[in-house]
Image (cartoon, rainbow, N blue to C red; front, side):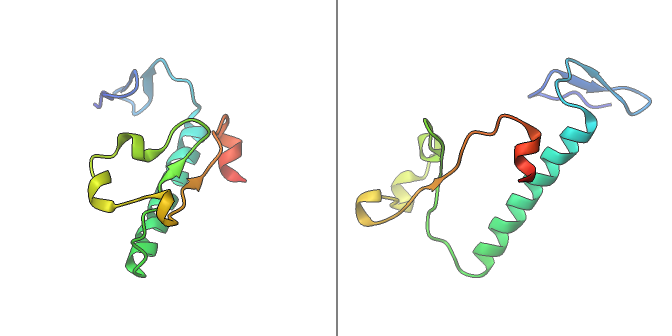
Length: 97
């Protein structure tokens, strides 16, 4: 059995889930597929030699806000670096577009 440390869910003996579930299994699978595809795309980009910092930026947050390595990567918009501007996703359907 598995108990998530992030979400309020646990697996049951029959393989199902229990707890406060806000997504269907199908939507959860779509989110996992989306995340895996994003990671694979990033890995492929790095393999091709692209190591330029390109942090995600939504309307009110940036990944730089949480980064322990900001001093090391030397990301600076003043020096011509750009942030990857993304919109906030409000539904699983938006991940598919």
